[in-house]
Length: 360
Image (tube, rainbow, N blue to C red; front, side):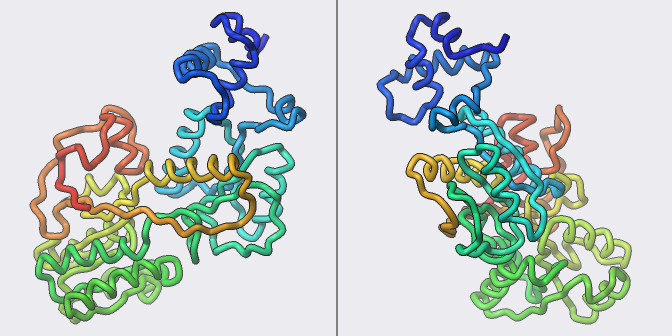
């Protein structure tokens, strides 16, 4: 038989109402912090599962959050996993639906029909209209690709931080190297701001212009006398690093590189690829805090608060900084994300590891 609130109350020696208040954890009850800690600890040990249907019938919080997500890319996977983990630690379950393009209202309404108390939409393609027929629930948008959202890593600062670092090394011709113009326009704006501050000029290169022809791209870089590239993501950075080596160009001696996102493999390239990390844990924590706040205050619908988290620069050797082998080797599998790997394997963040220098 499943464990009930009455079972927990009997084992601790308090009323069932006190157990319910402790599990709700909204701060409005008179249950002491010590009692709440005992209740949560025992509930976890006994694998207590709340009865969502019963709670909804009583007009209560289902303690289930709907997630519209598109797992598949390393960064998206990691943010999604972090959000789920933090919600579990707060006593909430998650119900996930794949975020299909063009079906936002239908999917949100399907989640609402399942009794969720709020919805987090991750990696939406475009800024949602406030006129969309969405359910009357708290809804937050995290990391919208085109346009604004409630929460995101500062995209413009990402481009600025990586480009500024290259310019501080003294490079003269820092070009922007991207995969798709629309999806990385804010990072490109940050690149342009850094160039303007340093009184330098550069050009934008998009991969689609070369149809994947590495030799043609390498010849163009030689002809333009490019000495550094800010890359729109780590995959682009690592790929061009290999292509440059095949064309007889050395990194960073001939062309320096900085990527961005914070993928795990940046430690495995030679030299290590300097990257502008998108802080995963902080982003997920802010998502959870915002949705729980809106649920408590009854703030429903599309708000778009435009809150941003500053990125952080992780220094390898591709930018011209000293490069050396990692001192810490993973004991567990890699997650595909630099920050998550260090937290999982060593219970620290990359900024504490000491393997490579880190700048804010």
